[in-house]
Amino acid sequence: MTVINVAKGTSISRSDNQHITIVGGGMVGLSLALMLAKRLPDAIAVSLIEKFPFPSVEQKKESFVEKIHQASFDARSTAISAGSAALLASIDCWDALAAQAEAINTIHISDRGHYASTQLDAQEQEVDALGYVVENHFLGHCLLQQLQQSRVKVIAPAIVERCQFTQQDVKILLAAESSNNQNKQQVIATDLLIIADGADSPLCRSMGIDSHKKNYQQSAIIANVALDKPHKGIAYERFTDQGPLALLPLSNCEQQHRAALVWTRNNEEANRLASVSDGNFLNELQQAMGHRAGKLTHIGERNMYPLTLVQSSEQVRSRVVVMGNAAHFLHPVAGQGFNLSLRDCATLVDVLVDVLVEALTKNNRVNKQNINTCIDVGELAILQRYLSRREADQHRTIALTDAMVKTFSSTELSRSVFRQMGLLGLNAMPTAKKILAKQMMGMV
Ligand SMILES: Cc1cc2nc3c(=O)[nH]c(=O)nc-3n(C[C@H](O)[C@H](O)[C@H](O)COP(=O)(O)OP(=O)(O)OC[C@H]3O[C@@H](n4cnc5c(N)ncnc54)[C@H](O)[C@@H]3O)c2cc1C
Image 1 (tube, protein in one colour):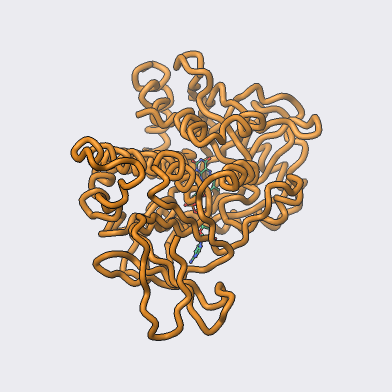
Image 2: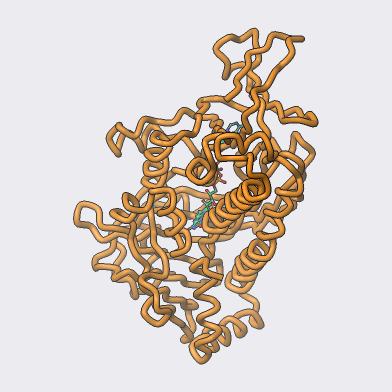
């Protein structure tokens, strides 16, 4: 790793090693760093820069939760598809996660006030589980545990201020407060810069990479809910006049049956709900949910997320790839954002591995130790190869999510009828159900 402290006017030199540097240590940045470190040879260095300090995983789980600041690892839970579970297993995170993850055996989809409903079953789809639900802070704990054992060079806390591009590399300039010596600006030279600094990325904007936004005028309220009976691995997806509501099965805590709530409401309603008492909130929730999941007995801390579809106008440039929320920030209705990004990460690593293998087979003087001398990981053609492999899945997943928001948030009669027909149609058409299940499981 080349970290250079430069006083104004000092020239910068770079070592011969190839470097990949990720900006942003959220769920996506961490997962990608681990995949790169695991699958690429040591001659290609991997670094990660994060604004907040990473807590030590030796700390007790409770204090780890207090100490973690990254946006990804807050009080939310994430529905992980079976495909994502396999990718997390490939970076040795799944064994620990599985101990706490709750399997989704059934997804029950219904429309409040109407008869039609449908159900996706793991057994019917011939899989062990349709997906798994993990609490984000525990996912963070497992990813950091692996990071500490990996060869990834971590630079945290440090804020990337801007980047300068040259023919040979990218110079990443850290904010002065990140440096030990305030008179010198820390500069990191890298061959490939991965931007994973979150939605509406400031770093992208500083490079003139715009984003397209579609404000849904909705917010998601998330909280953990206690139930009076076991959830039996059922995830409920319920569509109400004001927006979709999901109740995902969570592992028991202190012998309490729990579920993770994601309730989407228009902004005004979400603000109102955020301020009502726990008792009133539970009453309204129970009314919207009905009694399928049982009686809702307690509600934990409530958090709110404004919802906008944000898509970066460019995902690759020479020496740059935009990933995670910085590339596409999705509505959580279908629980696809992280799953989609994990597939992006895996493909980028696949493409880099393919390029390395091609170089090894073409030139017999090249080996794993000197491979860095004959490829350039920041080459635009390589990055375009990555994007062309990802475009179809990205378009499909974003379109499905957007269509679900439109169809299932609307009070228009035509959409309501369409919704009913859709649910009944799914029951009558096992093939359509299979396609939907495969997309939700990240297996298309
Ligand atoms: C309510 C809700 C529910 C969701 N549920 C699901 C689900 O069930 N399933 C699913 O697949 N997805 C779900 N998602 C989506 C998922 O949360 C995101 O895909 C994921 O958080 C994206 O992580 P990220 O690493 O790209 O971005 P972030 O989590 O935003 O991380 C960005 C990181 O970059 C750092 N950073 C920013 N700027 C700088 C800088 N200049 N220098 C250094 N570091 C910097 C930040 O500190 C942060 O740690 C949900 C989202 C929401 C809002």
